[in-house]
Image 1 (cartoon, chains in turn red, orange):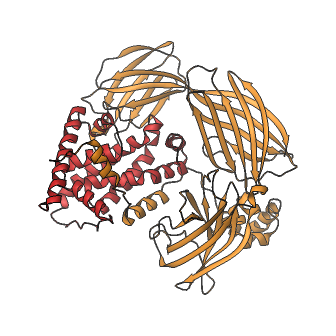
Image 2: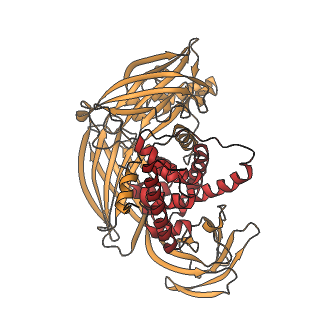
Image 3: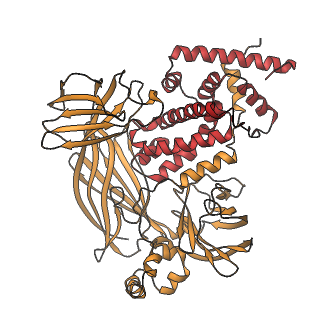
Length: 175
Length: 444
């Protein structure tokens, strides 16, 4: 079990191995969050690569070691948004190929489809709050949105998911 | 609409057991493998050997002291790597697999409670060696340890190319590692980027049972005081491949203790030769990895440092703790704004003057502060939403002006300091050096 705080401290002191172990520890989180924004594995790979390099270069700016994950996620979201902006310019020229789904059983496919049906903003908040267990205050800081707005978006996302599942059961879903 | 509350959504989401796809995983591994090294690069021993025949003669003469024979150099990748622990603790094995007319051979293995490593070669039919890492591009994490129930153990690794081969070592071996495991090597490509694709798979049994007796824990429990700190050298653990130094520093009497920096100590043998040194980054000797931390409740700092020097039973050594560095916290926050007028602030018993806060032509923020008495202060800058900033600082001793260049690094301005919003400068603390100069002689 990796002690994030200790590893982050060691990484900040220049220990490359500690930094590598931190990235490996959080790689699933990085993928989940980037996918919730970009919805394309190749773009996720690009965003995560840039995030790793940026985090490595600026690890000494990390203020509190225990918040390494939140700090890393902030950089990742920034990279994803940057990539989205760039993609808007080329999307009409290059057709983005979706990677085959990595889910393997019915429940996971259904959940993935439900999340994919949400607007990107709502999908990101659901991912950060429910999958990454990041407190509302931290999400608000990450996205620079008031906490109240996060709460209302969360409520809206829950309602939309409920509707999606209801429709899905009735066989009338339109994705 | 059905009741779709927090609990329901959490239950559903917990089923979402995400697997990182290969394309992403491969990119992560490739990025990690190419991170610029922070360690000093040394010329390989082999390279030195190749310089000239005269150099070879000198080198061999000098090397016989550390390693028994030149033949060992030729045969052993561990010996060629300059890692004394691996070279001395190696067990010769003979595993090989061939594909695409290239044979992967594993001939040296080190297995004990502190280190698990093997050396490998890739050799063509004509005898030519390929000096390449296992590809992380096609087979990320395809070399791992598996317990007897078939579970893969999550242990980090490092790869080190050595002339005509390479070394693969698992790092930070947990205390509770199973005694019996299988080392799985399942390579789909050679080189990074891949130069040859193929299938090279080996399964090598690992048995730590015997190594329990080959390792020794030697309690030292000697203590001293330095300033308000009590330092205890708890124990030394020795295995055939390395040595671990465990020490504690009780900082509970020191007010406002903050982050810890470098400990500086050496272990010398009877002849006065430094066999292990822990120091600031890049100046350590034979240091592999460390596990350290300051317990915020007890204010006790503990560290376990692993060195590649196998200290010898029955031999006498001297442990010399020279000094350590820590931060005495101040935690004074000051809000700054671009274009603000010069202001005086009382801080750490002196008046400092914020001279100016401006932006340069590249968008970096420049802060100039005048100090009457400058100490090795530790600063931190955060923007209006609390995002930490990277900076460079220079101090002009003649004028007493400390200049910060806070770098505008990220694309999105919400992560940067901007001219329209205030930002925070925190004087975190003062970096202090505590001299110790404590020597203990011990015999293992």
